[in-house]
Image 1: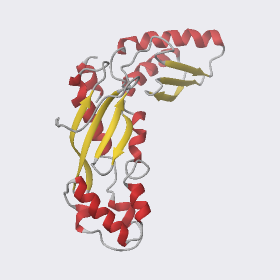
Image 2 (image 1 turned 180 degrees about the vertical axis):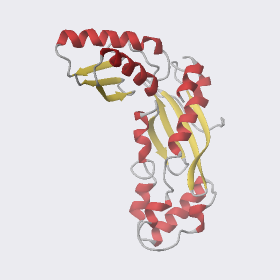
Image 3 (image 1 turned 90 degrees about the vertical axis):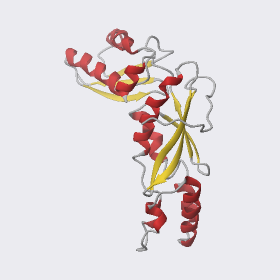
Length: 238
């Protein structure tokens, strides 16, 4: 992987946040410890546990992406306070370590008789749910949340390898015939070949695809660009 290319696609902290790579594909892990600043969830520390596919030096670049995605999360107190006119308790706007914050948060939920919702809000189905969509614009694959310890875990897809259908699936829709489709797929693999062994970067892939189809004068929709597959689906609109 080329570090400069990774950073172009996307404050560095280091810490001993528990983290380990998985096995198989998409095995690299980024584990982020969170805290609360002004009532907002904020990344505090991270550990990057790369598989053999990545160098450990890629950690800061991936952490930068995680910072951006986590910054989009809402103040956890907001859903609890959406009903009723009670003013927000002071801790909802203050700085706090994550364990202390969750203790106060759950106590607030109990007073509002919304304990079940509180449990959901502090899970993947609640306040962290937007992270499940991070893969649409980044290579981050949100994997798990340890709500008690305040540690979010992301997996990273293996570096891009567009050479074959086994390493990168390409599906074209709207082409006039199979011969055209097969020819285009070969061309797409060739135009993406300079990105091989780099981090899966949506903007770089899209830019090359759009330039290619602009020359063909064929409008397209990129229906899906999923690093988990990895998969590309294009709808041609001649």
